[in-house]
Image (cartoon, rainbow, N blue to C red):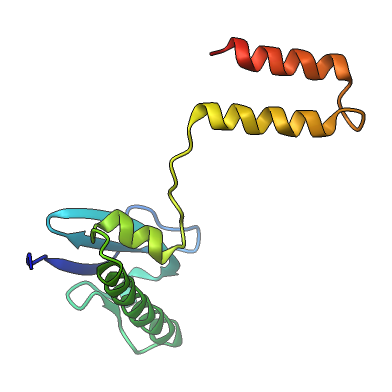
Length: 145
């Protein structure tokens, strides 16, 4: 079995403080030199962030709550990694993020989109769209191909 490197890093973006002076917390997932970053949707004052430990100082309640959120995120990302391995899917930062946020990346083809649009237009005839307009919408859609 091929060995993979896997790392989770938490950091704050000091360059993007909020109006209250707090900095957003970000997560970086690295797998085999590939990485992806996303926001944890949490903010924290920069003076209670420990850059070496990638955690907040526990001196304040906000720091304790953020550290708990960080630990929950680590646990969930590790579970996502295990699930990808169990499903025999490639463990990539993108797949981990998608599984973490329950994002389904299915390939949608353009023709399928137009067919779905035309079906919706046909259902709207006599409700919202006049029949003549429906023909022009379908015709315009097909002519764009």
